[in-house]
Length: 141
Image (cartoon, rainbow, N blue to C red; front, side, top):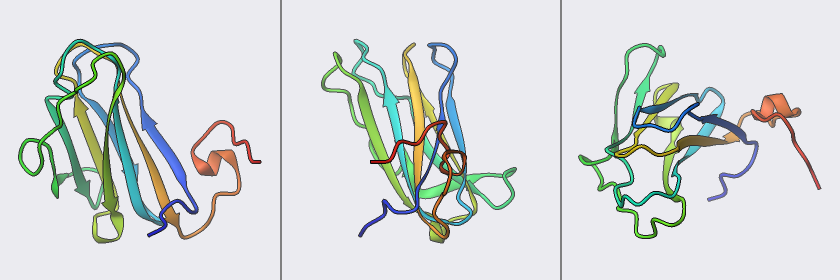
């Protein structure tokens, strides 16, 4: 399976360190796959997050759980084994069988920088500009 074609990138980055939920809403229109990365900065705690889940919506208003994508219910949120480095959890989603909008929530268990990003792949149309690719700069080589 080759998903890394015709991609777009989106992210949610909090403005301050804390324990508040970091939420990323993703419009999957025109993309077949979504690869989500939840990243937590180094911290002494071995708990990655208290909440890590993906929900879906047809209207970007009312959301319901995506089957198999709720940490603590459908999968075990992994423990952080190397607290001296950033910890990353990846969630791969076949968006063809999901509602148009996905919402990813990661709530840190301790006060720590947490980022949620997503790479949408297999787009119907390849992005031609940095803006269309969801980035401020696009270097090609």
